[in-house]
Image 1 (tube, rainbow, N blue to C red):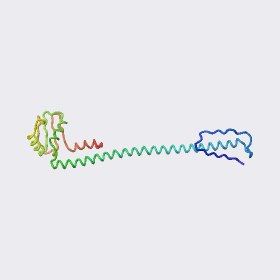
Image 2: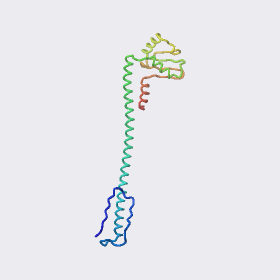
Image 3: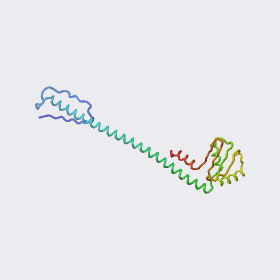
Amino acid sequence: MVQTLSISLQKPISAAVLTGASSGGGEDGSSQPEILQQAEAMVASKMQEIEELKQNLMQVISAVQDGASKLKHQQQQSIMENQQQIGLLAVGIAKKILAKEIEEGRYDIKAIIETTLQAAPSREKVTVKLNPVDYAGLNEILNSEDKSSFENITFAPDELIQPGQCVLETPKGIVEYFMDDQLQRIAQALGGVN
């Protein structure tokens, strides 16, 4: 009768050595070396199974890490696209509101001119071109207020310029204040919209 040996362990075996084996036969006539060989074969088989499980586990871990990396990239891409969409939506809303304000004449042309003058390379020999309606309104403002902030500046009507906008002509170049350009800059600042 062949004697079998079964071993159940809670932790994997990293190495095994059988000790105390004698060279004589067992009770049933089997030799100890045969039992040792069977035990070593069993241990080797279990070690092979453990190694295969380890390899499978490493593949699963690698797949999970790869999936997590792809998910993170997708999340970042979605956030960036959402920011761009929000930027475009905000600019679209602002454009409609500004168009309504301009249509109803609720804007400060003097403030627009002052903002544009800040971007001018020089205030010498500056000509500010305005829509004829804005030109007439500005003349009324300048006649009733202090004109010192607009010294050395010439104003001229230009029908090609839309209400609420202006163009500065200087010896060193032209500075434009157009609503669409201002909104485009805002869109770029909000979400990298081109």
